[in-house]
Length: 317
Image: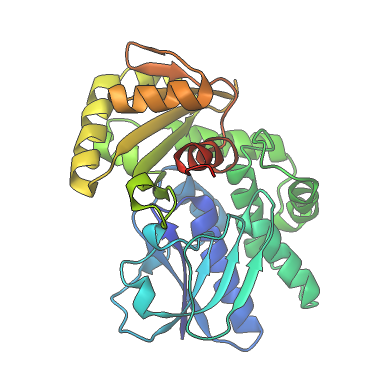
């Protein structure tokens, strides 16, 4: 049984893609099972309930050499702790290629689209397989989530076409209403502890040139996408404390938390210290006021934040 899993702090795409890809592989003759690497955010349980699907189990400890398949990630910092000891046989992802290495040839499918699920739809079509209604709902949900219903600059024409194709199979007549219901579930944060809020969509990124060790930096970048940014920003003091704790516990050079207003397509980033303030000023030309920096329409971590930080921390010449 081939374990299939997405990244730590899983979002809807990581969970949905693991479920869909495991079923696709099984239909093609490779017995596979979906797992998760952490707790679900508030949006994903809504998606799973609407689809009538149980959440994948947590990935158990896997012995060295176990064959695995990755979806929606390929960097070791975002994966299972002993990834380097496992045998990665398949990767389906829409992010940049990270530090992944394999001991033998593997199936790799990387495409510059807004969501891993868009690639999985292509794999169904290429295999000549029909899309089951449950899988259609999961893939459609993942695409709407990752692209913020086409608001994100990562959105491509293929993502839009995929949603148009999947909606009738999934039985979703009003895609906009369904997307808003997903975002409402994501925004229902209640009395969630600040450290949980920080890590719901949180990834650690290595920056710099490995050939120049003095340039290496490791940063934690969190994102809270919400239709109620006022609630999140009202807990700024708690969140900054959680960010400070994460920086110490994870041995990071810096931590940023972007609060993305989905409907206004606006990013307000919480700034922990003078270190983060300096980097944001020099990278994005922003000024920090009362612990916040206005990053405007930069709502995509993958396309608008991470590449700019990579360029800043990588020595020139």
